[in-house]
Amino acid sequence: MSLVVLPFSKQALNQALEILKSGGVVAHATETCYGFACDLSNPEAVKRLFDLKKRPYDSPVSALFPTVAEAKKFVEWNEEAGKLAKKYLPGPLTLVLPIKNPPSFLPSPGTGEGSGVGALGIRISSHPLACELAERFGKPLSTTSANVHGEKNTYSAAEIIEQFMFQEIKPDMIIDSGKMIETPSSTVIDLTSGKGKILRKGVVGD
Image (cartoon, rainbow, N blue to C red; front, top):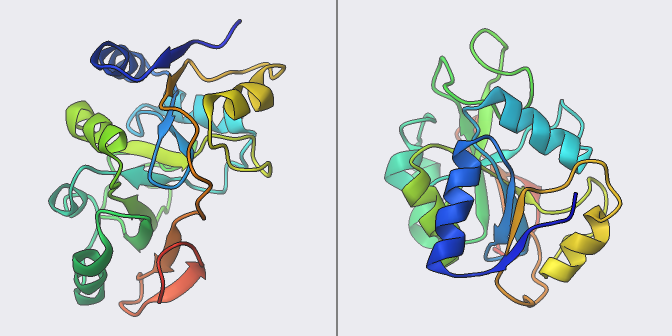
């Protein structure tokens, strides 16, 4: 199966939303690198994402939301999260917070009600395409780099094609927003205890 690549347009965005609704995986630009989106409420879509990336099932992905207010519906917010969100969001920051139970989405295959999933990384992107996808889809989307697990982040459609051309499973669509400037990954801060612990240093400072 050949990779479907469409230049960014309203038509491409509409097609991407239909693919997401049907359980597919879409590659799109974010404020850091190209990322993969899928419907986190669809178990088959989540499994497809992990198999596509060859990502270990015990390594959950973060969720993309259009606003902080929307993210608060799914995680337990705290004072430190509020301070960081006010300063850095929307932007390249991932906040890991306790999930409100029972979770209505799947950060990795096999998770869900009764699975013991305790936390979720949340992203609110400053990239207009990622933001519009999240807003129009209306449910949590995955946000994870558009690469094979362990390989380099991708900054163009050509780089995604290079990594997945000969893979058995391919993304269902790539929205081509052109070559991006290589930017570090998002900073990841664990706030599950209320105090911030940096899990990954990225473009956002301390």
